[in-house]
Amino acid sequence: MATDALAALTELARALREPLSATQQFALADMALRRVFDQTHLTVNRYDPATDETSRVYSSIPAAFPLAGRKRRKTNGWSEQVIDRGAIHAVNTAAEVAAVFDDHSTIAAIGVAAILNVPVRYDGRTIGVLNLMGPAGRFERIDAAIALLFAGLMIPVLSSG
Image (cartoon, rainbow, N blue to C red; front, side, top):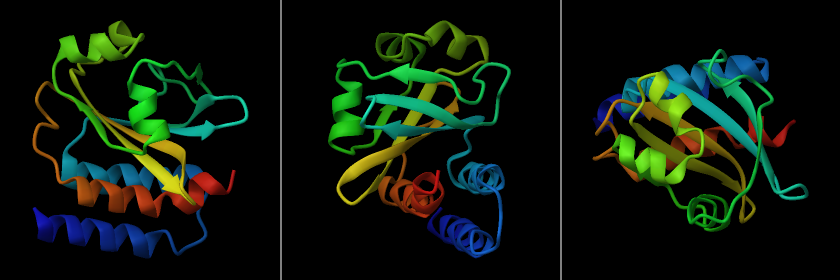
């Protein structure tokens, strides 16, 4: 996996050096992440500490999760882990998804029972979250260091808007 991950990260880093729209950059990240983590869907949220909300800036499934969707932060353990501490969060069963996410019925309807949330942090604060989704058990064994490298490559695109 490490060789595949390095190749995917290198190709993404090269591609991101070119003049691309934010949507194109996120789509490239989606493809690279898929090579390593084999997610079925990806959404990317930007976090605004002034409003304490996240807004969706990329969605590989806009019919279920449209762009510009907003969520007010809740204190349910997830936000403290991901937003406050910048720690990766993973759930791997439909029951775990339902326990954490209010929109679990929408998530289940698209065949998702596992979610990997990777915070994108810069200057000591979370500026966004990569939300990888897949079937049950998909994120039981992930390399957190590789996930954080992908998040690091998203700092400029999440910072620029």
